Each structure stands twice: as C-alpha cells, then as structure tokens.
Length: 167
Image 1: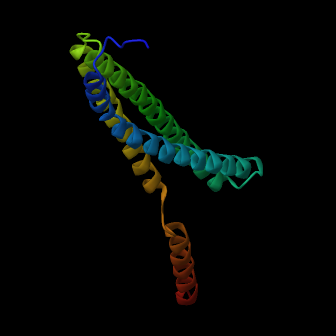
Image 2: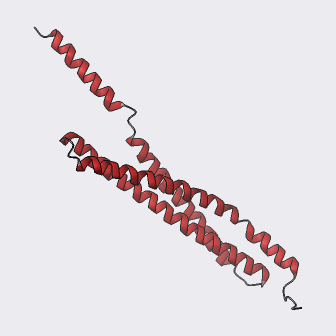
Image 3: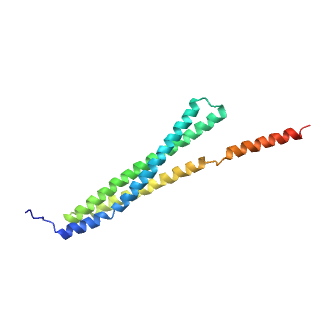
C-alpha cells in the first residue's frame, strides 16, 4: 500500500477550505443562465424588428425600428459583456479553489495568489451585475405600456373634436 505524505486531516481541512468558494460558483452559474436567456430574447426581438424593416414599413415606423435596433445592440453588448465577466469570475473562483486546496494540502505559500484570484472573481461578479443592471434599465426604458396607442387615440379624439367645433 502506498503511503500518503499528507495527513488525512490536512486533506479534509483543505477540502473544507476550498469548498467555500463553490457556493459563489452556484450564483455565477445561475446568473449566466439568466443573462443568456435575456440575450436570447434580445436576439429574437432584433430579428423581428429586422424583418419589419425588410417588409418596407412606412417611414415613421422605420426610424423607430432603427432606434430600437440600436438599443437592442447596446443591450446585446451589455449581456455579452456580463456573460464574459461571469465566465472570468468562474475561472477565478476555480483558481481560488485550486490554490486554497494546494496551499492547505502541500503547504504551498500561495495566500497572496488566493487573495488575488478571489478578489478578481468578486470584481468580475460586481461588474457583471452592473452590466446586467444597465441592460435591464435600457430594456425597461423601451417599455411604453401602450403609450403610443393612448397617444394615437388622444390625437384622434382631438381631431374629431376639432372637426365638430369647426363651422
């Protein structure tokens, strides 16, 4: 039987220490799923708006469609940036886990490396959240909740009123 040069208690403690950042990986994976879903919706919406443009819609609707495509592009870039930052965060957390485990089990002096990798992960996570927040702000700004229809009805009512009041 081969003897391990490392004590089982040391390995156990190393695993316990390295497992703590794994919970952050769960949050990162969940965020990637959410942002990827939003990106898919952005792409679907952009395709729909592009098809409307190809169908030669009237000029006022064209300018609105081009403006919406620009905002969809910005939202897509933010979502892609968020996914990239979350991926880098995941790699940094994985690096932190490896470094913590190795530092504990083979007595490697890597505390500074683990601090760097963990802080890198946290900064990437916060930046990804900032991208996600910005993307959702842009998305909700696009919502008009029937404002255009209400405006059309109001203008039609005003025109009808003017028509009845004119001699």
